[in-house]
Length: 427
Image 1 (spheres, helix red, strand yellow):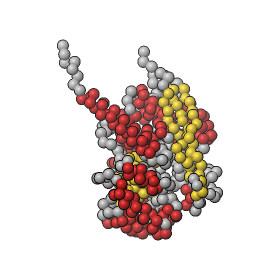
Image 2 (cartoon, helix red, strand yellow):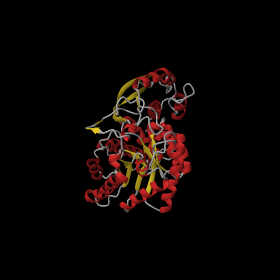
Image 3 (tube, helix red, strand yellow):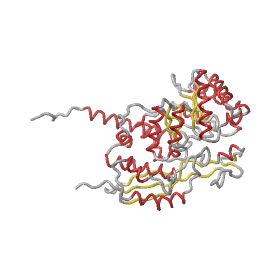
Image 4 (cartoon, helix red, strand yellow):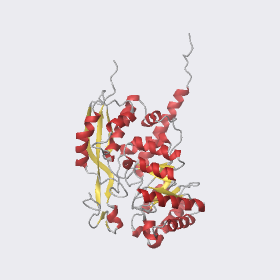
């Protein structure tokens, strides 16, 4: 007798994210650091202080064989800004999950991941569910589908999106947090593919006319030459949180000129500049980023623009990809919502010849990070963020080891499938 692959019970477990929620508006306005804290009053609705511990909510799906599969809900570090959803409120998310989502989950067939997501994550009262809920629930549904099929999460994605089993490793990108110099050394010693993020999120870190930032970029290149292994040549990726526009001016030509000079400072390196400016809306961001991209392309520099703020959902990503309004799009998974949409977003980028960066946040958990690896490898994204946390070592270990294990499993699958069937055709 075949047991129907349905969910019999749902359990919840409150938890912690791996870093903190930060009020970007207050930091941009000059909130000063006192040790690990920020002084001053918060400016973004929902924040009770400028820096708040991140929280998460785990959702466990109990399957007919009593196996429980999990997914984790959370928001990103800079919630409530750049077109993103408000800061995560555990009580509100748990209440909505219990009243709306759990009744939808009970009895749902988990054998088809996309169909289960469509049913469970449908709109409520003519609005999307909070993206944190979509993110966590879809992780759990993907794990349920993989358990039912006795495969990896990546193989479920490949099957449902008609993709070949991947063979290529996805480059890993690490972020430094505020301990920039120390963590850059760690990244170089571990030969990380893309580094260092840099967390250039304040005027003090950017400097007058960008001078402090330019010196940091040059220092990173020198440090690679000093302590890196022979032949090590990573991509240099810096997130400037809109500070080029804030300090240099919100003009596409001025921004492109600054970035081109920055590329000249580190010849021979591919340079990624994430969020050079935040123009305040998706529509204006789309128009101005397309101008910056075109200006840099005409110069033939090694500089590439990465969009993050104002490009959050799958619909936003489609707009930027089709308009070529970035060289690389960060698919910030908690902001996209369902991880099915993150897979779709990578494929959209590839269809339009735009780089796909499977990003996320330091506020995530080990569980969501491992799910992200499976999405990135299955869709063959261009790079993936090492997360969770800001400690460098932990994120590199979690993402790197999950990827290594996954590719080993897929290689094993290919080897098994290529073996001849000895009994075939025998009398």
